[in-house]
Structure formats: structure tokens, C-alpha cells
Length: 111
Image (tube, rainbow, N blue to C red; front, side, top):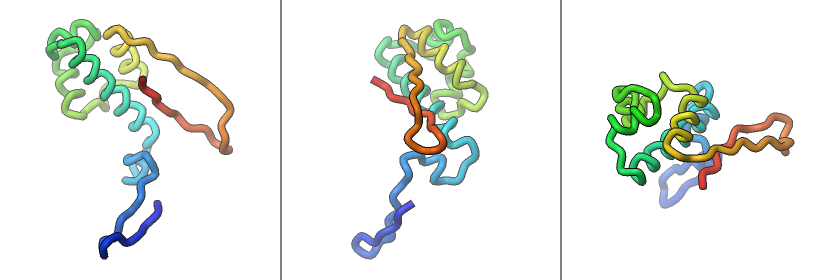
């Protein structure tokens, strides 16, 4: 993380992953899950779905949708979140390519 002073205030530049910047374990996993939940929220809005209707369509309970909307998606795996998106009518494409660094990264690129 890079630090600089702007108008006497110390400003830290982030890494692009707030979870990593906070030192949380599984930061990349959390970033992917957050991105998937954001896309689910957008899809629900676009489709005009209530939490109950979205839950039925995604094959999960309404309380799990409520948890997800409040930012608690620890009880849902990345795979289940991807399944939710496909049930809402979205395609998911997984692309694998050689990494530029020694260790690769997970990236969510939403259209």
C-alpha cells in the first residue's frame, strides 16, 4: 500500500482489494463473492424481483436472500452464487490463462 500526504492528510492507496487491505483471510475469495452478490442485486433490480420471488427463482430461501442483500453471504459458496446468477438468466464464463506473476489471481469481470 502506498502512502502520501494530501493537504496535510495521510492518504493510503489501496491494492484494489479492500479485503486484502484490511488483512482479512481469503481476501480474493471475498472479493469474488462480493462481485457476484453485486451482480445478483443488479439482476434482481433489472428483473423487478422481490426477495421472495428471487429466492424461489434462485433456489434458496428468502432469509438467505435477505442476508445476501445485507452483505452477509458467508453461508453461500462462490459456486452457489454463480448458480443463483444463472437461474436469474445470466451466463457465466470462466477463462483460464497463464498468470503474469508467479502466482495467479481470481478476477471477476462483469459486463
